[in-house]
Length: 395
Figure (cartoon, one colour):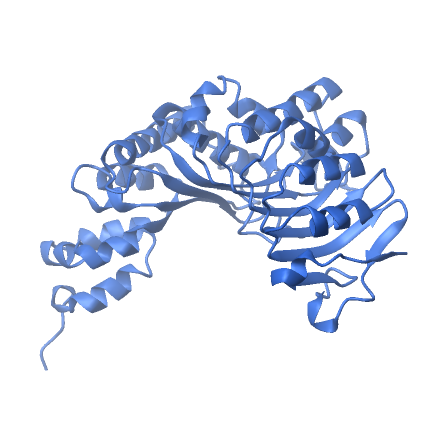
């Protein structure tokens, strides 16, 4: 029997293998030999390279720079997921020094400049950030976010979409991942001009936010979580969020998640928790077509102010929304049915106010949004039915 070598595999099989590999594994495969490199570099292979994952290590980033050189297939990249792996038991021991972080940002900047200048598809990139592992302190997510925004600010690489720890997570206890609010202030500290070029044409923005946690005392059964915040600092953080959102005038899709922590309610924590109030007033979303809100807290005034600004909305999903002042959700329901002629998908669940939680007893069974983890049932509607007036009862 003739032994089959890697070089002897048909092109179709090598392409199938490539489709299952992460970025650094593809680089290793292409180094196996000239024949393998050639077979994995044809036109069909380029489609596999359009979307890849990249672990944030110095070795991986050096390879990333190499494959974005002239003539290399990294220039075909359109969707990049950057991730870090976190072991919570050794997080502090493995903390990287500032020189290592700076070096990583420089390597990423070089790769982004290569894509910006030589990409055959115009250089626009969709970027997603992830943390693999539990992220209680939010330090790893802060490191990843600051490194990527620093590279974007330096390279001016245009961003098509930017997902900051939002889409890939359930955001339930034990699977948290979000960005400490103050990291937005840090990212903008050099001035918004650094990031404005990258986000000028951004179409989609996903943000998972929470308080910036200073310390976690795991020996305390009451989870003694501490915040180094003053009210002035919290106000600056909410202002920074508005500045960041206003860097994206072409935004068509917005996804916002808030992750709750067991903090005492102070003026500072409440300022951040109610960030949507300022956002509704100071941000404009004239092109918004799709909006997803999860576990937010706001006033009824802010809720109505925001949705009056987005008459072109096509898709709306709200999963957890607490009104701490106002009469309830009738105003929102009226807006959805009378001022949004293009609304084609509507999903509502977990709506609460001072009067209680909204139930939908009159909704047809086929329209109910039911999950055991999030009672009571909500509403899912499609097509013209999405614009039919929602009726709910509060209890």
